[in-house]
Length: 70
Image 1 (cartoon, rainbow, N blue to C red):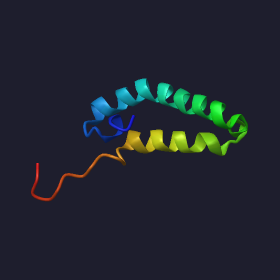
Image 2: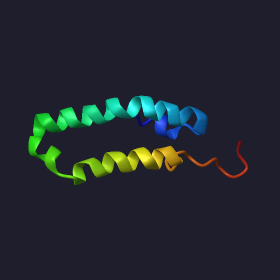
Image 3: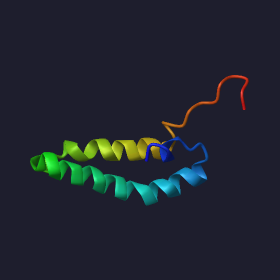
């Protein structure tokens, strides 16, 4: 997921996010079930994952090109 959210081309980044996000989210849930199962009942648990998804959809994590660069 960390590599997909940095892709500059929106036409490539968004479809890859739709494909990868469910697996990433399931991985987070499985780790939480292993360590703290009661955390899954809190609404705030889901806020971070969805916030990262929508921020990466908008391109918030795409590195800006340096001035004078390509």
